[in-house]
Amino acid sequence: MSDQTYYKSRIRSKGQITVPAEVRDLLHANEGDDLAFCMDEKGQVVITRLQTIPPEQAWFWAERWQKMEREAQADLDAGRMAAFDNVEDAIQYLHTAAEAESHDAEDHA
Image (cartoon, rainbow, N blue to C red; front, side, top):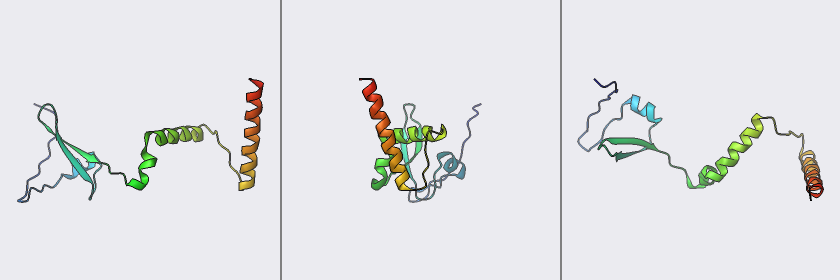
């Protein structure tokens, strides 16, 4: 006997079904979410929750931006950061860092 778990739902007159709470939990699906249904190579129907990204947020989810987010988080986790009390101190820090980088580049040239 298979050790799969099954959940029951009934098709209503207009083709509507209630997705069992356990399945909604597994999919992390909530009211208003879109679900996609497709058939796999075995002929079984697979249900997937679609994540729709609002157009004004699409840039954030681009692979390039997500890579930069991961790098920034790694820097934070490793303590590679600086905090400032005001903008002037931050700008001075950036100028000093740029000058040091410029001198390093000249030394290696």
